[in-house]
Length: 297
Length: 197
Length: 92
Image 1 (cartoon, rainbow over the protein chains, first blue to last red):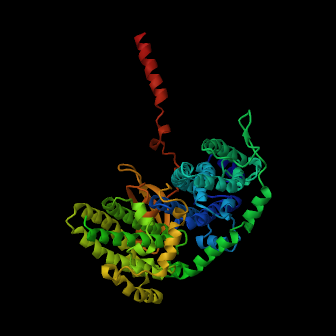
Image 2 (cartoon, rainbow over the protein chains, first blue to last red; image 1 turned 90 degrees about the vertical axis):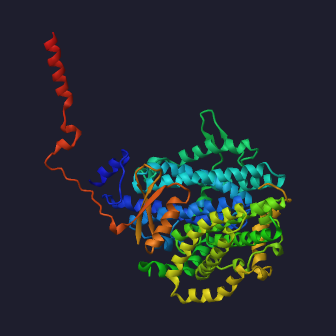
Image 3 (cartoon, each protein chain N blue to C red; image 1 turned 180 degrees about the vertical axis):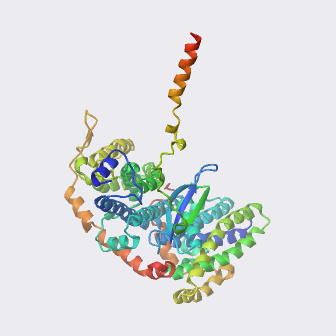
């Protein structure tokens, strides 16, 4: 099989296993894409982790701990896939903490209130699950397979998020205000989440069928699924232009693409602090890895 | 349920709650990703045990498990100082884990012998999960037993572990409990008592 | 060491490859696989196998067209047609 035949194979729905031949460019793109996903799961742990210690009931404490645990578990699964493609986990982590590798925009922002815990679990996870469901059809089969487990676990996170939000919305005026204030802060990053609306045919990740949908397609799906749910709770989406037009397409104010670029290149409000936390945790526990993983010594 | 039994159950529940809270500080930052997942389950189990024990006491006292867990002042907690310590060094965390499981096994054995079938039954259930914690603690003990920092941590914490089985030595708290309590209850305290979360 | 993990979702179903874990030895692999692939009650059984112990075979050669192993080795359709034609001709 040559590169052209391989391309035709994946574009017609063919799937690839670890030991199959694959073009170098495909392997490099896979590593880049999947590694960023692993990084995002691992960095996504940090904003919520702070609230594990502040959860206001035992049930919330357990659910939030389990959610963060799932995310660490996802990063484990994902880094294993990257490792089998040729980039060891330790090198992924080195690149992450040195700021060389990227992670998703939403994990560069602070979590200020308990309202953020609900908004993240509900809406950030909803946005993520839309991207992840599209990966169930990824041309690289080992990645598509673990995505089944990941999507299944994410569905619990959305349940947890909705439950937190509904409880707050049915609670005191202060609690409702927590949710609205949080939504106001997260809306911008949420609209940027699926990336700029480049045509999918021009997106190399789509060309190789690593992704199976375009960015705008994902964003429309998010708006279609969740804006009505937001409105029905009496919340306001902080975008006066947001509406569904007669063709069934959501119109919205242009997301701030400069902010997105700035944030994902390592200049978000919490980027440095969180990378620093990862760096410290990793340095402090280097001796443990040395003690238990002989080959890492 | 007489007051002495209530007090015993609260001691154990408070130990499990505070230890679970401390263990959950590792969620997301443990030394290995696989261990992160495993240790996070242990934290969840401890809190689950605390909740089940609080529920028994809460019924006798006409309150709720959440109220017992969150709405008391720090000096009302009956936990032992060992579980209060903030130990973000893996050698110390594993040393505490090992010492705690050792003492907890003895305590659960006594609880399983009680005449009250509900308490004895719950203790048996908890013990079945703790058996798995003991396997986890032993596995780490075997790995780290020659590490100087682990040996040191065990020596440092062993005297504290003795208070776990001696009720007369409880009641004195470390300043770390107050810090933990402040953080643990901050969201809950931000609204009037009785608010649903 | 890398361990491959196979899981059974429900009793009676086949064990399927679930993923892998990195672990120091068999004890760690047991604990880690149990948590990673069973903590939400999603598995009734796991097989945890050191990757080095797995023998992988993925080259199946059929140079001499042993079609009796395959469906296309049995052209029943034409033969059935012939048989039917023969019977109906005899009846006519």
